[in-house]
Image (tube, rainbow over all chains, first blue to last red; front, side, top):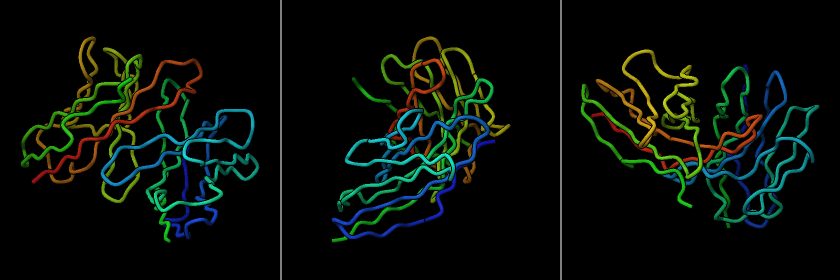
Length: 115
Length: 116
C-alpha cells in the first residue's frame, strides 16, 4: 500500500522569504508524485508532478519540488513567498497497482504567509 | 476548454433523503474519480470510473453509496438515506487515458453536502 505524510499541519513564513512544505512518501514501485493547492471553499488546483527524469520539478506560480529517492521525499519549495500563496497544500502519490490509478493524499499543510 | 464541472455546488439534505451529485469531466477526458473531503482532513478516494464501467470502488462505503458514468451525460454519485456523517465536500477529478497512468487528474470545484 502507498502512503503520504505531511509532517507539518501549518507552516508560517514572512513574505519574501523562501518556503518549504514537506512531504514524504511510501510506495512499492516507482512513485508518481503530485502537489495540489486548495484555496478556501475551492477545488484543488494542480501545481506540479514528478514522473521521471530531473529531480527538480518546476510548476505553476513559481513553485518547484525536489524529488529525493533516498529520503523518499518530495518537498515543495518557493524562493520568495507571497501573501497570496496562503492556502492548503496537498501532496499526493499515484497508485498504479492493479487497474487502479487513484491518488492517495497527505493530510495537508496550511501555509500562512504574512507581511 | 472548460474544466471539470460539478453541480450543485452546495446541497442541503435532511437525514433520510437522497443526494445526487453530478460531474462532467474535462473535454477529452474519459476517466472520472470521486473523492471525499471531511472537515479538516485530506481527500479520500471513493471510486474510479470509465464510461459505463466501474474500475475501482474500493473506497466506497458498502451501503447507501453508488456511482455511475453512463455513455451519455455526467457521472453521478448517489447517496441514499443520508446521515449527518455524510456531510463533506465531494470532489470529482478527471484525466485522459494515457499509458502508464502518468496523466494529471484535474479537479472540479466540489459539491459541499450538508445533512441536517
